[in-house]
Amino acid sequence: MLKAAGVDFAVQAASIDERALARELLSQGKDGGAIALALAEQKALAISRQNPGDMVLGGDSVLALEGELISKSPDLASLRAELRRLSGKTHFLISAAALARDGQVLWHHVASARMTMRILSETFLDDYLTREGEALLGSVGGYHFEGLGAQLFESAEGDYFSILGLPLLPVLKELRAQGWLQA
Image 1 (tube, one colour):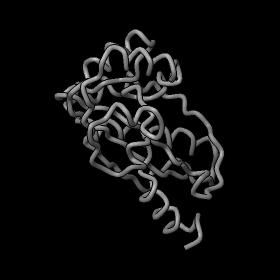
Image 2: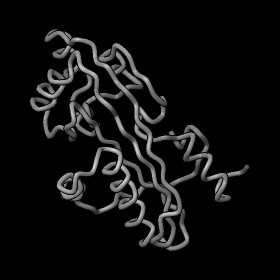
Image 3: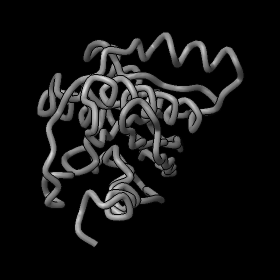
């Protein structure tokens, strides 16, 4: 998304224990928005400390279904079970972004989308999982909305870019405000 929007950037993975942080926040009664935001901020902070002077964007998405947070599936069998669980139901996809520089969070944003899956047949699930394969394991909910994953849904209410995993327009606006992109 950033590349398509003309933003020059480099990718660097943050070494944080996302599952442990999410568990800790859940035990404190935090909701999906707070958890997605904390994960995005911790990623941005970790990398900003390693790259003094650089503006660092961290992001994360969580899926909330009936009051429970759903994580990325570890394998295709688990993903099939998760998709069966999501089938015919509405969930919330919460995406957060944070900008940090020199170990300080300068800005953050959280967006939520209401996503309703259609009832999925076993035949469709077989075809979907075969065609998309293990690439789905990197996405919470096991879908790439910008591709074949769109066929999973009956409706989606929310910002398209946030559904893809990054609230792009607010990020671009803040990068312009910070002087990192032309106004």
